[in-house]
Length: 199
Image (cartoon, rainbow, N blue to C red; front, side):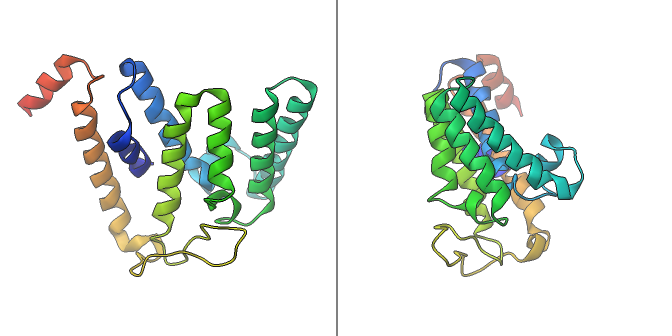
């Protein structure tokens, strides 16, 4: 999540005020958690679905069916409901690090949904999502970036299971980088920039 926020901050064009800036950062954080919705022990899965582990895929699939039904009955915008339903059912149906980690399937669906709801949301949500997926390329098991095409992508030097204690250091570095970028944003009040100059 920290890397998703840092990546979004590094490339986010100026927005209208601090409210929109923090909304963008929240969307980046959400986007960085979404690829792991299909992992029963992930943060987003445990928080969003406080159910026994074996019931979570069923609940995600039923949420997808519900989104499709809302779209078909006019209870939700058609494109958003259909895309959301497909994404949720795919997340429930396929193993972890396949459908939701695909740059061909998972990321485009999320980005299109965001574009249909509010175009300004597509970049932060998509960049958080992309940062998560690319971060998983560092893991020894790799990621099928072009799923459903077989084959996993990984870096030549992987960081192993739980990244051998490196992961917390990378998270702290991403948080520090985010703080520096945040203070330098033009949307931040002047007192923040003045205060940061004292530190």
